[in-house]
Image 1 (cartoon, rainbow, N blue to C red):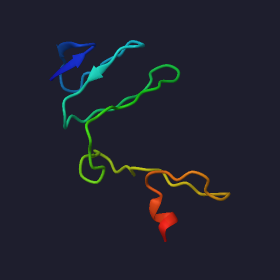
Image 2: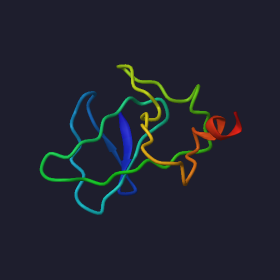
Image 3: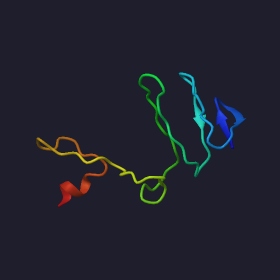
Length: 89
């Protein structure tokens, strides 16, 4: 599999673990299953993608809800993108 690692095209074997040094980046091709985790300590990661439809563009090997459920213990102050139906009903 060819991916872009810090703006350099690199070939990795299927299932190979890619270790990303602090401050580095990886560009994955569309429709590539992937996992991100920290081996030691904490990690902050994010995904930047083109405009997508969360109902059809995201697939998971194992079931996974798109948004976690929040049990409100006080009145809602800010509305999340998946909560508009709650304030319109």
